Amino acid sequence: GAVVSQHPSWVICKSGTSVKIECRSLDFQATTMFWYRQFPKQSLMLMATSNEGSKATYEQGVEKDKFLINHASLTLSTLTVTSAHPEDSSFYICSARDLTGNQPQHFGDGTRLSIL
Amino acid sequence: GQNIDQPTEMTATEGAIVQINCTYQTSGFNGLFWYQQHAGEAPTFLSYNVLDGLEEKGRFSSFLSRSKGYSYLLLKELQMKDSASYLCAPMDSNYQLIWGAGTKLIIKP
Image 1 (cartoon, rainbow over the protein chains, first blue to last red):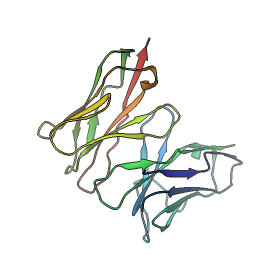
Image 2 (image 1 turned 90 degrees about the vertical axis):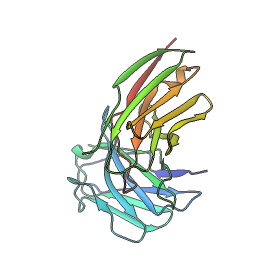
Image 3 (image 1 turned 180 degrees about the vertical axis):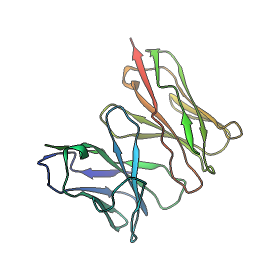
């Protein structure tokens, strides 16, 4: 149980392109989903917390107009990197948590984004 | 502030036992999670402790002392596939996980 699917797993695109990443909880309802970014050999950095039906809460330093998050249902959240630039190249990982607060976050497989 | 302290890197031998220590400070506490992360992959959940004591799950065990702000992950009968980073992640009063850089475990034959 507790499977989270993230798509796509790898994206290579030109600078200025917008990229959408999907995160789905396959066998449970996720009221809360989290979006992380991880640069090589660094720790996970929380970008935003997304609650179903409400606006995402962004961490300090994360531009909400650049990283658009939508969490329209209990099983789907999307992250759109708008007008991506080479410095946005990173490993983006989503996680989802079951309804109760103290359950583990289950991670998707991540999306490796490379902007040329 | 909130912080986590784990060794940056550890080395152990295949078949041996290794203990990865973690000390933490958080605003409130709702348990502590351990995750495993192989290079280039997303983290996977290993264990959760909310009460003091030892939780055993196969070759992996996790211990918590809330009064000391201390946890450890014990790995027995080490296998080469256990080479990975191990992340200690306490959960604060807002049910947010606090992430450190983790401990990179290298297993040698």
